[in-house]
Length: 280
Image (cartoon, rainbow, N blue to C red; front, side, top):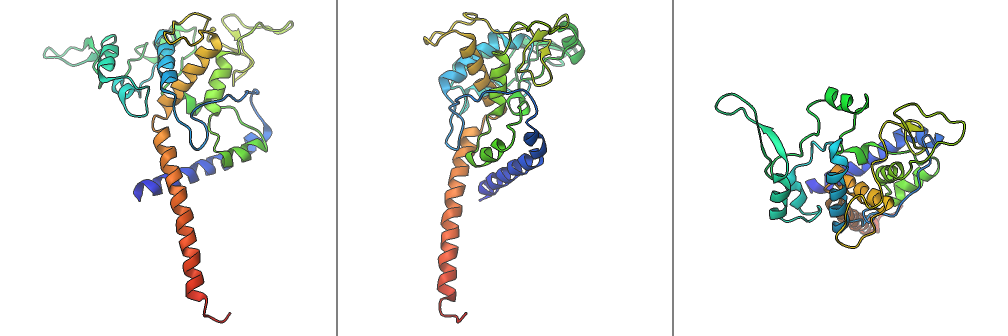
């Protein structure tokens, strides 16, 4: 019952958040982002395990050099609802990283091989170091980015989203951004150290260089090695990192709705039975 109450409460909070954001959505602010097809969209959505593993590979080989994931622990990769790695695979993955631990008996911090319970280490020791290495720009952490970045749907589309339960604006935006790099049109001046991308939520130029290139990451399952495929896979992985319990939430939400329908029906027929002999 407590889980059901939490699920209903979460749904009400989500609707309240949409209502609060209604003015901005009605204005249609932000760049136009095409919607993509995701396995995890809709009330019965689920994560594609193979896609999550490919997305993790893209993150590890491309994105992790600048972007951390401080809320993600190595053992999460083997948890139910995740990419589906085995515990032995997770141990191998963790051993490839070093984390700062201590203090030891001498009072000093040590860099030791990571274990499954450790979290993914940040590529930079602090924000200042990150900005210094990226021309003043601070690479955001990936832990909640797929839920924290999105472009407004605009009126009246956001109203339909409330009923269809479409919540994948974050992955849509990430995919659009990663595939949206292009040459600036004539007459548009791009500042030094910036790159033209009309899908960027804060303008048309950003400091991040195009991170994905065709054939840049090797897939062993025969999946095409295109920029579009890399972007789709890493966006799905980022969505899982931001909401690892999505499948559990949607499953519980469906059961709650069935319960409420049955409960409402029983109340209706009870009311009819109690009041049927009362003269109105």
